[in-house]
Image 1: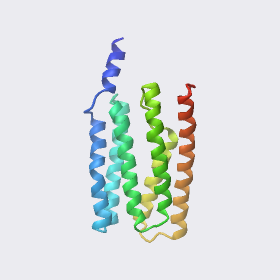
Image 2: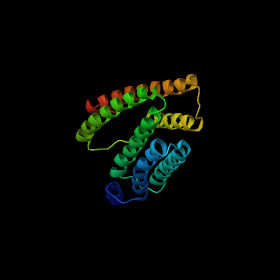
Image 3: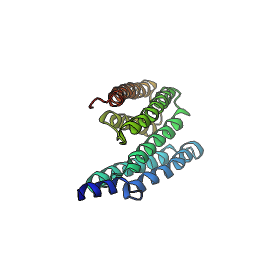
Image 4: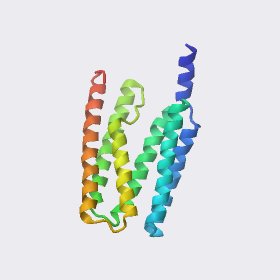
Length: 190
């Protein structure tokens, strides 16, 4: 009984190291945009993006390793991820027009995730974290951005290949989330 109370208290904490890392990542977003679009310094933007990615890894590790998972963190972490990814894609779109495909898919995916996520929370009372396929999409998006930033004169074929790979995985991921959330809303065990 005592461990259940402690677990519930942990889930309701607001100020945790992982949550502070997520907040820090949110603060880095305008700096990434400024570096890439205003200063025209893609390498600086890439370094800041790397810092953001490292703090993302650190907050996840700390949350799991030291039982710092919280309901706020389950929301704040993916919000920081998605806003960072969106900012990164918008920056890249200024040089690579085909990135628009990723922006459109991401916008549709996130709109679906917000609506279905709210419905799932309402039905189950639980906030679900990202699944493996969502993590793969995140990895691919950051990898694609890194290649486009580091390889300033990337060939159109390689650029389109990376963008296409990301787009396919994003579509697969949203399809899997649709299946999972539909089952959850129907009361089936997922």
